[in-house]
Image (cartoon, rainbow, N blue to C red; front, side, top):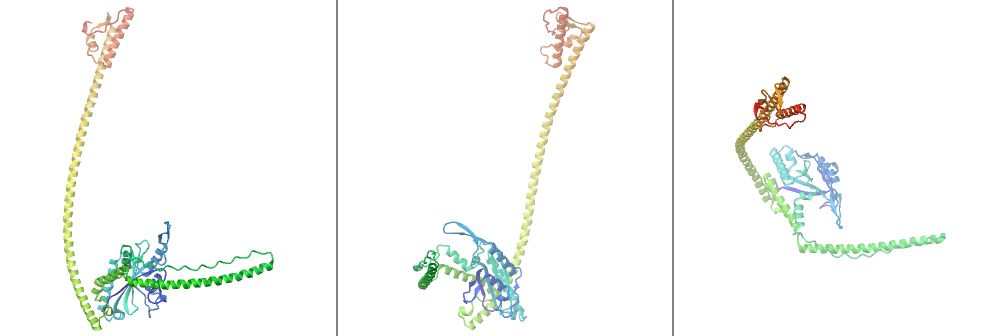
Length: 495
């Protein structure tokens, strides 16, 4: 075992010249193709093998199709110097693909050749830790693919990711160093740009000669065209000489400005953005070693960077290997204790859930009893209200019945009085004398109708009107307009 290796980088759709090698350019399409082991981009491998997809992740083809769709359909809002804003497609040099390369010092032939099954298990555990560490570092909304290459000397795998949650698919936000530098760049700690040398004033181009006026004479016209072509040729030569002088002037200015910038950089030292970038990447490597490298028996740094001898490096590798075994043992014990604690916690949680369930049931029962009592009271109130309404209705019905009986009795009394008067007039037992009706049995019939406190019932009123009518009719027949009839029958039968 030796030291860890992890490298992160961002790419754009536009090819960009590699840091090392002026004839090599990298782009997102090239990275996708190389990860998928396409023949055109696998010339650095003597015997290319198909890439193996890590379980539970997208394939490279799926991620590339998603990247093409998003970059083609995503737009960004841009504001021009005048203050107006407009939308445009993403710039082709915008970083939209984030990548990581993880390499293990174990050789492919030792792992897949069947020489060391234990080493194969260790490498598999290292892959799981690295992918899990990547997933923990990434923000929500990241789509990624993981592919393993087994056709080179050492086992390694690539992680390709898209920042789908960002409106501009900004992959730099996933890069630990670039994200830290951007935060400093937007803060008050940002480094002031170095002012450049003033740009030289360029020599203006000579004016283009004017054409001669058209002539009706062919010979004159031909001479004018020849002279104009000669003037144009001389003008173009002067323009070329002017541009050459301007180019030389600009080249000299660029050299002097470059030296000026370099001198200021040496004097100023590293910028705050660069310091934040390097500090963030060192912190990333330290965290990667703590979470992935050390549990896998890998050192933080190699012998060259740490300036160690071969023996020292070998001793450190053995120490790291033993430390990894100790960490694995501790991890196993920790997992056992954690599992036991989880079981206890689950049992306690189950008991707590049971108690909570019983308490909830008791509360539900109390609430049900309260609701039942409220319903009973409501029913009792409704019953009492119904009884009151029924009694009131019964009283109204009784009153109506008594009123009807009174009317019936009144009509019956009136009918009996009318019948008695009519019968007495017919048989002669009733006579009209001195404006009074006299006859046997009429006292009891007429006393109630002509009493002072007699009710103004319809039957009694009808009887009084009939008596008055009989008396007036009788007087009209006998006396022809005699004195007014007195309606006073309160003396009883002697009337």
